[in-house]
Image 1 (cartoon, rainbow, N blue to C red):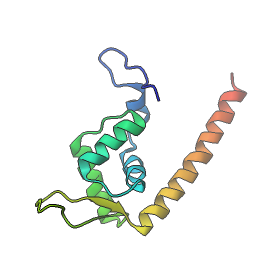
Image 2 (image 1 turned 120 degrees about the horizontal axis):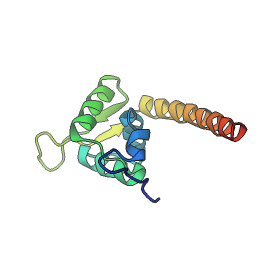
Image 3 (image 1 turned 180 degrees about the vertical axis):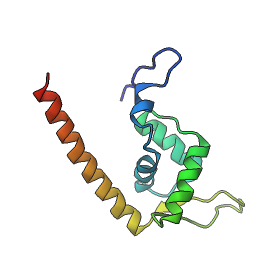
Length: 117
């Protein structure tokens, strides 16, 4: 996928489109399997062309853990604070519901664009 253009000195259109969406992007990333925080960030950049800050990602990971939508797995290789995360059963259900809502919203948006050319 070709990245969207970035106006000089401004955020890219992709970044603006995903301005408030780190949580669904993280859930989509983890739907592909367990990942560490930085691997999630790299995956989101690859999938959506958006670069999220580590502060944004780790704050969202904490919220998602509090909501029990993701869980931290035991640290790998003796690292103290480097935990991989994975979706819980409830996280998978929440992501399915979210994606179904996005599909409906997107379909309606496309319909309205066709009607009002």
